[in-house]
Structure formats: C-alpha cells, structure tokens
Image 1: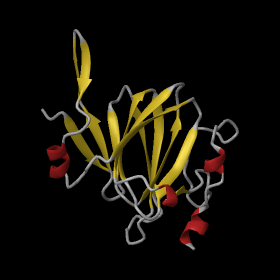
Image 2 (image 1 turned 120 degrees about the vertical axis):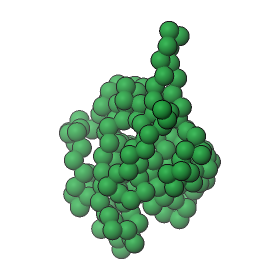
Image 3 (image 1 turned 90 degrees about the vertical axis):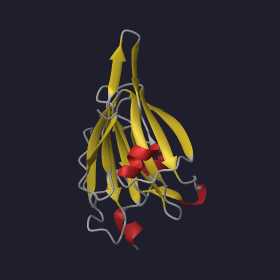
Image 4 (image 1 turned 135 degrees about the vertical axis):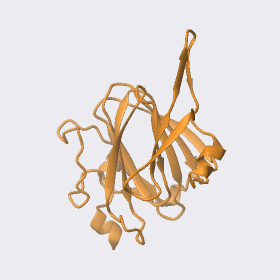
Length: 182
C-alpha cells in the first residue's frame, strides 16, 4: 500500500493528500512527501522554504498569495484542526474565482497541495492549532498580498462567525476581489 494517496479537487491541479499513519507500540510515523510519488501525479515540487504557524481557536488567516512570484504550497496540520480554503486566481482557468474547502487535522493526516496561482487561508477550529507549510518558490515580500477572507464576492462559507473571528490588522486590510481584478 502507498504511504501517500492523492485525491484531485474540483479546482484543477489542487489535491487533497492522505498520508498513511503507521502506528506501532512506540507511537507512529507519517511520510509527508516523496518527490517521485508527487511527480507521478504531475506535481513537480521543489522545496524552497518550510515554516510553522500556531493559531488560537477562531483565528482566520488569509487569503494570501504572491502576485509576481507565486508559490506552490503543501500544507498540513501537526496539531489541531483547520477549515482550509483555496481560491483559484488563474485568469485562464475554467475555475477562476472559485473556491474549495478541506478539513485538515492531526487526526485525519491529510494535506492540501496548492498550485501556483491560488489564494490560501484557513480558520483554526481548535486551540493551539499548528500548521506546517512547505513551499515551492522563494518568498517575495514585495508581492506578498491577499484577498479579504470575508469578501462577499468570494462567498466563502466560514465555520467561524465574523463576530468571534480573530484576524490580523494586515488581513483585515487586504483587497477585495473587485480590487484584485482591476
């Protein structure tokens, strides 16, 4: 049996990736990435940076992307649970401006592969949720931006009410989809 299983999403090029948790009397292990298995799915992924975020329950981060030098991302949850969302911003795509959501957790051992040209964000559904980001492409501070998570033109159905959502000032100041399309 493969250690990694790929499930294509409705947005072309995006995948939910099920990692197999191998448990024994010592604990367990998960294979998070194997270059050849990804290549067999048409995913050429070259790791450029890795970082971790820690979020309180009801934190919403996003919807982030880089305009000039987009990154592909592989995101997973090391602890806790998130409602993870991606939006297709590839103007030539049949699914341009569409979004999908996936629940990622330390219990379901799933990851989300996000191709270049997508905005990404999530809502933390548990305290001390720890996300692992693996990125293909260098971070470009100059073009790092995003869309408002609550933009009605995106219509994302968040499981966290805006009255209890915890957001950064930066994320609250991100542009709308209409501003992005100008």
